[in-house]
Image (cartoon, rainbow, N blue to C red; front, side, top):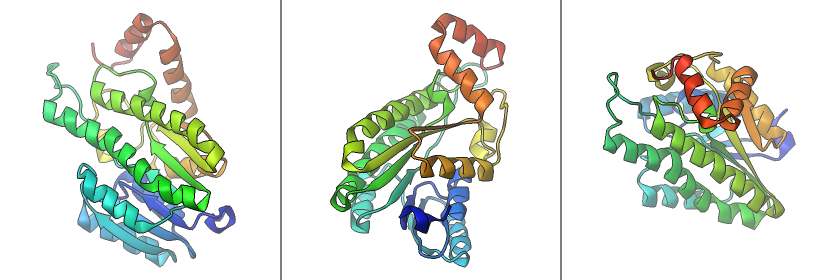
Length: 256
């Protein structure tokens, strides 16, 4: 389905230099669309932007650290009303190979990038969406938001927080014409995924993930989660007794 057919013309993607972010930028790039792409890797950002321009999209880029909240809000507020905002920027950390705790500076960074920055983005884009009477926000959570994995405790905590935040936003903002979806991918091939400890079942390509995300957003799904087998298993971990779920994830290889 064309973006022009859905009424979406001004699309913002944060973390557009990541695997999923770049695949989403490629997917949404077409004539009549204005893309606002954010990233920290300047060379990679320029490469993604140029590729999108060749597909007919108008592209503006912004390189900044989303932990600089005043700069982040200032940039977003200057853009004016947006039709679709995909909050994709994120990072990960994990325990050490001998069970060392995550460094506290990485814990603080994860909370800022994965959770607090997303909240700042939502607060910044809401006035414009309310003024035009419509808009759509997509928050990149993770299937790890269902049940915490022993190897990535802070990452799981931030993704669980983002899931709950997005679900609350949807109930609050739907009467105002603003749609909110929580995206919960499983393992998607990327450098960040490669660095994560533990098995990576049902690994998807970024392009396959981006296509599933776009389909879900066009259908206004409250929760866009994939792949199905891992989604179902993760959901069961959340509803089973916690002691049983902990034993299952250890048996699967996520920390002994």
